[in-house]
Amino acid sequence: MQLFAGCCYCRMLLALGQERRAKTIRRIKRPEEQLQPGSLVTLRVRSIAGLQLLCSAPVHVRGHVHATQLVDIGDMANHGAMPLQRLRSARILEARVLRTKQRDSETGKGDKICHVELTCRPSLMDPKDASEYEKALVRWPLLLPGTRLVAAVVSVQKSCIWMEVAPGIRGRVALLDLSPDLSVLRAVAEHFKVGQVFQAHVLRAVSSRKELDLSLLDFEAQKTCVGKLRKVHEGEAAAVFELPGRRWGSVHITELFDVWAKRPTQRLHVGSLHEVAILNDKEKLEVSLRQSQVHGHKEVQEEKRPKSAEELKVGQKVSGYVVSAVPQGVFVALSRSLTARIKLKALSDMPVMKEAVAKMHPPGSLLRDIIVVQISEGRVELSLRTGDGPGGLTCEQLSVGDVVSGKVKAVEPYGLFVRLDNSNVDAFIHKSEIADSASITVNSYAVGAKIHQAKVLKVDGSRVGLTIKPSNFSGEELEEDADSDEMPEMQELLAELQKTRKKGKKRKAEAGTAAKEAKTKEREQEGDAEVSEEEPWQPVQKSAGASFEFAEFKAMGFRWRRCL
Image (cartoon, one colour):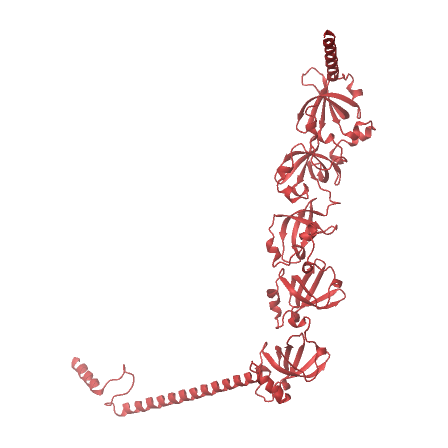
């Protein structure tokens, strides 16, 4: 029993001796010689202040290890490691010397205190050349754009975080440069803590003003990011976004949404954050907000954007946004790389005035079911006319003697231009082919008037000549036209002319009657005046206020002489 107790006591003494020897720090007698760059030193851990681990060694040696000197750049995955927390319970620290500085002691006895900047990076703990340790020191002249380094979080704010890359060198990381995840940027304080260490790279450094901009993102491998909307335009470049890395990108109007939305720019709000996909790596970046581009969602056939004219076919219906409206027509963006044109005459089945084009189709408006009518040398011509679609009537299908219908497109002194129904064919009716009588002329027709029945006289390529003279139609054709639900244009015109003539005769009759009555009144007034002069004792038939009898006039004269 005594032997067992003696053994336990010996073991306790041995453990206490090992702990005492572990707590014993070797005295540094000659700091100038023993504390050279790369020298291995052992120090006692004192405390953690901010982002630095403070330690000391006898005699008058003070050391500090910054949080950025505890990890290697290659070992970081940017998950926000906190290396200082692992050292809170440490008592002894082994490190390599980066540089030393001699300072006067605060005691005033003339003693010198040696301040040592240390590193504990695993890659530098093995013996290296002195130049390797000098490269590990971060100085302002070395902070060039693109330089990769380790940075530790100092403070977290709503719009940015501040990080230290070395003692006394602090940089700012903007909100967009923190993460490509939108949910992280909306709750910065929940994902970034003081003391976390990340791999960063320099965006901008101005040593004279101590300004340093950093980013935690890898731009080379990054295809998606978060952008902040800064401007909204009505046109081809619909929006301008601020991107990570002090970059800017524009969004084409066709890249805002996967669906063809009406007025898509009205759904955007300046200052909002959006996930965007980077489409190119040029100096002027182009980005997309479409979910199919950002998250790789499958595109519906109707939502696909044609990249070139080779992907389209004549007769195909497409959708697009108006990017420019001029008197000659409208330019429509089908994608960010393909813009088509709609000529003035193809904007509608009805004639469109040049001055009305911009009001009808303002920039940014959506046009759907536009028909591709021509593809030539990479240029695409579109049409909004119903007759340009599949199954429409063409000049090749017309022959002399065919009976067609249409609407008046233009009225000229020499004839009428008519757009045939269900087609894009414009035909011409000479003024001599309008009517058999001179009472009906080109002025009898207005733009937009319906031509129910017209016969083809001539077809010369794209030129078509028509006639609407009744004498050019057979009896059966006229009977068929008479049996139709609508009144023929000729009958409508004749009825209108008859009504106009009746109204004219009625007005003339009324005017003649009024003139006769006026003359009769004048003659009566002249006769009454003559009677009143020859026979003043007769009452004059004038207005009631001015007529009185001669007896009253005689009485008035008697009263007047009596007063005198």
